[in-house]
Image 1 (spheres, rainbow, N blue to C red):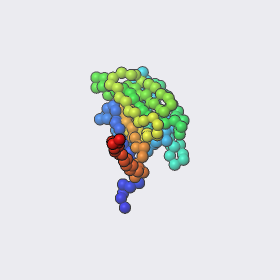
Image 2: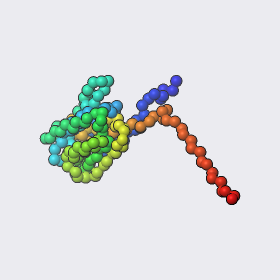
Image 3: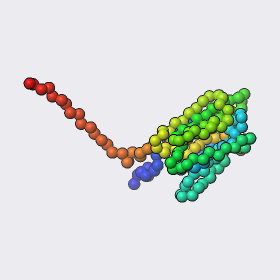
Image 4: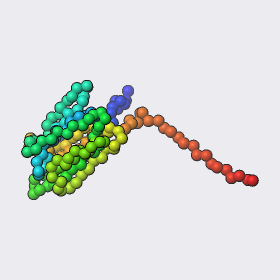
Length: 176
């Protein structure tokens, strides 16, 4: 039996920000996202935490980062609404590595920006017609969120696709 058969295929995108700072974390497999909790201030993003449905129950992820002066709850109306993109700004301000801001896009709305839109811009688009989001990953410590990326799930695993061949019909010249 092939050990890879039946395993879910997933693509890791990013992280954006400063992945060499802090400790790595992964919230892989959190595709049924219902909430994003974000802490920030006018200078940077401090933390992210999520809630999703797993095994029919609402599950809360670990908090990645610390506490900023502002806190926002992003409510996503799953399953009719789902995450389609994430963007933001990163900057090294005299050795202070930070995610300056984050913005979340769903198939229905945009949330953010949270933080300051200054520095190098990044953008991850996951498509708008199907639920492709498979979770977040990144780096953080007890004070700050340093980087963030996403897991993206392909629409159809290879074993579910069918090969379709098309025939080309050559039109013959009429001799009339």
